[in-house]
Length: 166
Image: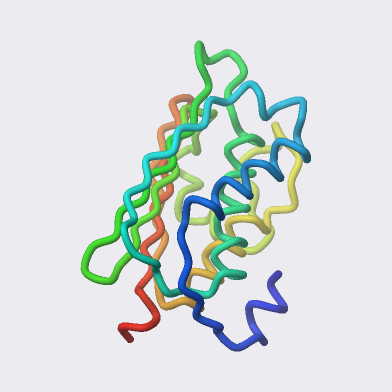
């Protein structure tokens, strides 16, 4: 994913987010049958017209954010959840992924997008997922930010420009 992101030209497609998110969730259900049913995913998507962005890169962003929800969910939570929120305003798509997982400590927040950085050893992982998210978002001339409270959960917010308006 990193190599393709760095080398391949941006290919804008007119896309709708909901089918891409549902496809990613279906893939996660197959890949993580032991964890997927334990997290309640809720979609709140408002999109009236296609949005122009690179579909393959958007899939990388969605896949990595949602797989982290499953990887870092909190089993002892009364109801583990993930809210996926999408709004499009003034040719900018804002995608929010909010969960009540294990959260990220404040000392780690400025490093979680670094290559190979892992904020915890409690779960397996390579430390590449959020790095790929940031690199991919940057390639699309967007931004990504995180807010998190240890033990309470996180919200990742990705903003992407409509590539046809650029």
